[in-house]
Length: 168
Image (cartoon, rainbow, N blue to C red; front, top):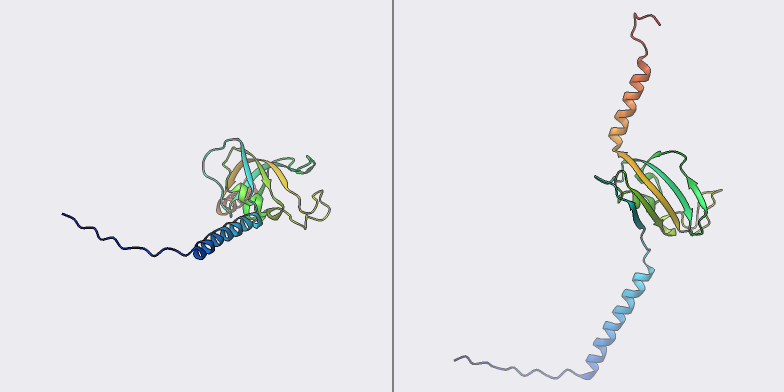
């Protein structure tokens, strides 16, 4: 036979319960305020899925893109595919590139704090604190080392010319 010993609990004073609920309410209000004050991240929509790995911060990408404002004004467009280092662009664009796959097409919405913020490039059609929208196609990407090797090969091919002893 098992014996159960009950330990009587002291009643909790009503004042303590009020302070407990006030503390919980204040913590919730603080959490909501912090969430609203925190910068919002980028939005990335896949228009056409790509395949394979995604570029890293130091990789060089080859992309075609169109940059627009929320009112539809085009402020930049690549006339042909352009290469650049992922870490060499505004933070929101870099974040988006690192989530893209080769061959894919994406729509990237960048909030002002991850774009140009209050200081857009001089002479640009971008107003201060503008949300930026980019339609991007990630054509290809390479590591910096692969790009250096390709450049060296091109230089060697260009500098070689005709072998000596062969008439021109």
